[in-house]
Length: 196
Image 1 (cartoon, one colour):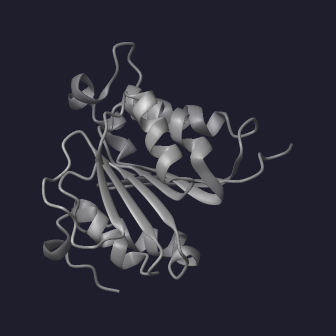
Image 2 (cartoon, rainbow, N blue to C red):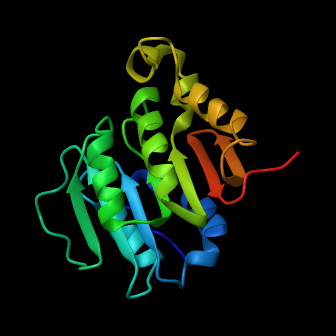
């Protein structure tokens, strides 16, 4: 399918993410799924997901610090306000709208906020579902460390590495790490932890 950036008003198309999403999430396309995306601004990507997951019973939940004022035209889309550092608020949203088949973190792209979301929300992903972190490559941008790094020097690269190191101990059944020019995606599939 050809995705039109002007219709959806999201950088997922310009950054070349959609072929990876189409390939990895293909088994979910015709199912009734619950999708949670963090960092949706005015909800353009939520519209994209409602078309991508077209089943009439699919639900798309978008979180942002300041979500758009206009109510989404698609009743399957819900926009909620929540800070990525607010573990209580994230848990309440997950308990109300989850469990999720897909969680996408396209929020602050900072270590602390992204780690908090992962620590709170991964348990609310269904077995076989995906926890996805976008734009984790900002940790490689040396001239942007003051923006994307944490007080103790941790970056998004540190976070992705620590999640990968935890795989023997957490219910991650598989992963795909994509690093390319302007395209950094990490897909973690929930399931039974790997056994050595």
